[in-house]
Each structure stands twice: as C-alpha cells, then as structure tokens.
Amino acid sequence: MYTLRIKHAAIFLLLFGCSSNEQANSSINIVTTEFGEISLDSFINNYNDFLRFTGVEDNLNFRAGLLNSEIDRLYLLHHADISGFRNRPYISQKLKSVRLQTLLNEFYLREIDSPFEVSIEDTREAFRRTKVQIHARHLYSPTIEGAEELKRKLNRGKSFNELAAEIFQDPQLAGNGGDLGFFTFNEMDPAFEEVAYALKDGEISNPVKTQNGFSIIQVIERVYEPIITEYDYQVHREDIEIILRQRMLKDEVKEYTSTIHSQLSLEISSDDLELLFSMFADIISNSVSQDSDLRNIHIDTATFSWNFDEILQALKATTENQRMQVQSPDDLYMMLSGLCVRKELFKRIENANWRNDQDVEQTINEAENRRVIRLLIDQINNDLDNPEDLNESRSAYFAFIKILRSEAEASIDRDLLKSFIL
Figure 1 (cartoon, rainbow, N blue to C red):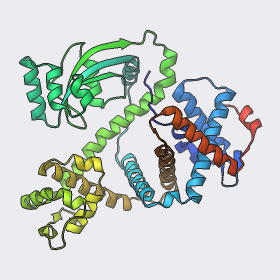
Figure 2 (figure 1 turned 90 degrees about the vertical axis):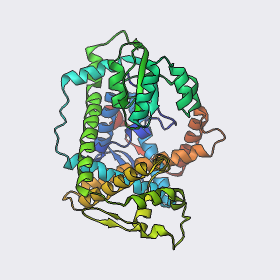
Figure 3 (figure 1 turned 30 degrees about the vertical axis):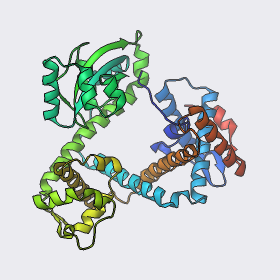
Figure 4 (figure 1 turned 90 degrees about the horizontal axis):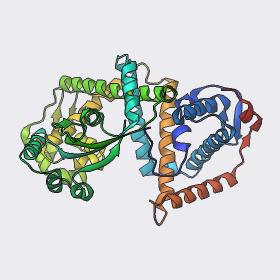
C-alpha cells in the first residue's frame, strides 16, 4: 500500500478539509459559527473522500473526527484573517505564488485538449506496484555525459560505494553507496519508478532521465505484500486513476510549454548571457550599481521584450532552490526561457474566457486557504525548541487550537452527524 508522509500534526485538516467539492451549495449546515459555516453537502463530500482514500469503514468516530478537523480549519482561517497573518509581507508573497500557480494549473486543465483516458491494464499494474516495496540504490549526474561516464566506470569494475563517495554531496548517500532504501508506487520520479520496477534484482540500468537529471539505478531486492484482493483494488482504483491522469497531464504540459518556447524564439546575445551569469549572485542580492553594463542587457521574443529591470524582477521571483540550479550560462538560459514561457502563459490566461469564472476564484481561494493553514502550522512549530519532535509538534498544535476554540463557540448539529446517509 502506498503511504502519505506528513511532517506535522494537522491530522485530517490539510488532507480532507479543503476539497474542491466545497463549492457544493446547500441550505443545510452541520456546523455554524459566528465567522463561517460547514454545509452538510460539503462535509459529506469530504467524508466520502476520506473513506475512499483510507479504505476504512464508515462509523461515528470517523465522522466526528473529520468534522472536528474541519471546524479547526474554520478557526485557523478566522485567526489568520483577524490577526493580520495573511497580510504579512512574507505570507502575502507566498499567497501570490499560490494564486499564480493555481491559475497555471487551471490553464493546463482547461486549455490542453487531451482525454487522459487511463486503461484498466495501467490501473491494475499501478495497483500491483502498491503491493511491492523496491529497495534500490542509484548514482546521479546532472548531465547525460556524466551519467554515461559513471556507467562506463561501473562496467570497468568500480563499485557503487566508490562512485557514490565521489559524486554525492549528501553525506548519507555518499556513505551508503547511493542507497535510497525502500519505496513503492508514486514515491519516486515516474521515470525512475518505471525503470526500477522493470529491472531484475541486481540488474543495473542505463542512464535514466528524471526531472532533476540522470540516474543509474540498481534494484537490490523487493518485498511483496502477500495478499492482494479485488476489494482492495476497487477501494483504491479511483485514487490510482487520479495519479495516473496527473502524470499524463504533466507529459502534455511539457510538450505544450516546449511548443511555446519554440514559438517565442527567445534571443539574448552570448555576451549578455555571460555577463548576466558572471553577476548572477550580485543581481539577486541587489548589489548591482545603477551605471553597470548590465543595464544594457535585454531579451527579445516574438511577442515581447524585457529590459534589464524586467529581467531583474523576473529573476527575483524565482525560489532559492531554483537559483541554486544555475551553475552555468546554459543553466541561466534555461531559467530565463522558463520565465519567458511563464510570462506568455499568463498573457494567455488573462485573455481566456474562463479567467473570471466564479469557480476559478473559488479554486484559487481554497488553494490560498490550504497554504495559509500550512504556514500557520509552520509558525507554531518554528516556536518550538525541537520542531522535528512529532509529539511536541502535536502538543503545540492542539494547545493552539484549544485557545482558538475557547474564543468562539461552534454549534454542531449532532443529529445530522449521526443520521446522514452516504
């Protein structure tokens, strides 16, 4: 069975309290507070998601547990509103990123015309993988040339342990021969997973292109769950189909964005690119003088142009992790290409006939609310002496919720909770 790994102790709150099905309209409320309600329809939808996802049987304890977590979600969002938490500059920037990413997701879903039909064979194969734990190790290179050289060294007799010690900065991977431990379906990059499940125990793959580079994989062993039932498959079939459709969408997105990149015909001179790369750290840290030669740098595309100030603004919108990937002028060019494609996508979004739909705004609001709750919980944990201590994290979370509950009362229709029919 594939599992979810959750760092903190928000229980069902982050998983099931934010379903897109909350758009359902209902005049019947199962919970009423002075700052919000939970409709019976939305709760039933979320509860059905919970039962389907976990495979457990409906009972009153699960109903009450999920309802309490959804009430807590109302308290947390109300606290974020009245305390000014949402308006803090750091939080506002995070929510802006969420809004933009949600709009991009909507664009892909609405504009990329693909049926995304998942075959029964693919679903059953994915389900079988959930019943197999793969133990593997790998060697990694950011380039195909580096990966091919690693494979040649393996063929000449070098060991995984020797090569891992040379290439990995992570001390654990460097010290254990690139051992990744056990994993199962949907816990690794899809391309990595596909090859790993196809290998025999002990077999070593050719270089495999993943999202972050190239890996050479060796399967050490695999452990099978002994009992596979048709009932178990039917319980998890829909979840597996969703995962497979998401993978298909990612492939379509890559092709779509590649087409946009080709159409843009991005142009930046090699001298400008070299100069931009040489000053990249200063650019990000605001250490560029007003009379710098950088001011003459510009980018031209088929639909728009950027001067240096616009390039600077785009680069500063990237994450620290993205910037760390820029190790050469070619890496910087790829980053700039991605930023230009993103700008073109948002131009298309603004012109889309669905842009101001109420459903889209609802989806954006829900995405922002999910992030607000995560950031609130992060703040609670950041105040702890040991944020990684799960028990301490849970205690702090529940102590915070207890305070919020004491400040406002929630009216629960317990007869509805007991009597509604799925």
